[in-house]
Length: 120
Image (cartoon, rainbow, N blue to C red):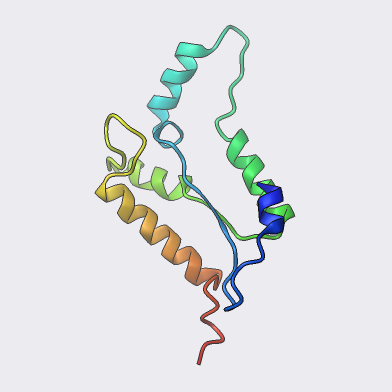
């Protein structure tokens, strides 16, 4: 990702390039992650569910690019009992899309990634 981020200059209109990380349902639903570990782990194995997302966050920070990992927003809704993915695939359903849309909109506004603060 680092090479792409470095080469991306972004539009001249003042908007900024940001990275949004969309987690699979395995990362959002603890029971799905546990099934993966139970099925594939050998004795003594250690799986770090946060490793890949952590590396992406580090790369974005090094590149000084805004970064949003949607995992926290999706997990918060799941804890409240929401079903956010279609049962047999990795796509968000209507509720999942609503959570993601809210999280991205808040992030864009909070970090002024659209450059609207200086707008007339």
